[in-house]
Amino acid sequence: MIELQITFSIIFVVLGILFILAGSIGIIRLPDFYSRTHSISKSDTLGVVFVIIGLVIYEGFTQSSLKLVFICLFIALSNPIGSHALARAALKKGIKPLLSDDLDNPGGKK
Image (cartoon, rainbow, N blue to C red):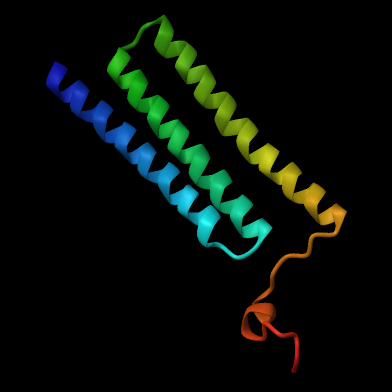
């Protein structure tokens, strides 16, 4: 039973690390602010949630696990709200999203 618990814990932690890595690559590779914000908010939330679930499985069902579950719920609720507020503030500030027309015609000439 312990081997199965450790195996599932490792699987969830590694899966979370892969999501966080994908979000980090998205920050480097994506073209504009809004795409980068979307990439990191989704992958960061999933990555941290998977890592915390892995820690809960490893810890067993104790009081510490309950605290980790509450942290996981807080992150799952606050991270998307924060990224939405950040994107909305950027739009109000005047940062324009990069549209598909901009990608096809980078010089702006038709």
